Image (cartoon, rainbow, N blue to C red):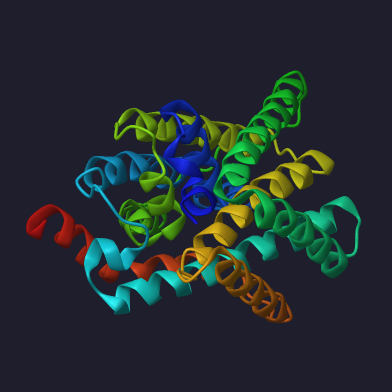
Length: 312
């Protein structure tokens, strides 16, 4: 179980930093980020993106105070928070499956069949390889989607397809500021990130600095993609890669709740994935879903931060 859930605690800081960024990204961040840039304006996008990036650094600063553990119950001592974080993982799986549906539409494929096929692939390699497989594929997926974004942006820079930059209104800035606050707190109730923190070979802030920098560069590329009005197959493939990196992390995060054995954890994760697939029948707006989810986790995250910073 130690090797399956924590990759034997052998992961170096640099590799873990990329994995942290890839797990934190979420497939919907591509769509939501471009919507914010094009709809709410540049200032709102910068505030939202900064909160997203700095969240990993803040998480690193405080999470390193907790030396041993696996789940939020070990961190907070609360079974409610333990299972609240489990519910968060269900939402993560649902949101990234929704992103896969969007990618399928962009790529001209059947959304449901495409989503099921990708989930089967994700489950197959994490089922056998555990957290180590999740981290290794995070590296490949992150490098692939960053290369795709960079290539299409460089090509876009040579074209006349760019949009006018939208100026953010007060309401947009207020929305983005609230979003940034909720994002700063969000990692503290994210089992994916806690699992990676406990899997570090050496407790060091370097992994979280690397993760924050990688995510900030990703946000810059998302903003540029929105500015150059990038779409089509490239964006579909980027959404696919980002969603896969979070889905395999979510599978492993849910597996942590099967403490009796890796087999129990795998089965639990499989059931959660199947349940999330059923929810895809509901048509929920991504931006609204993202905002509701962020607001919901804030008070619980604040309590976890209090437990770490004040009582630990």
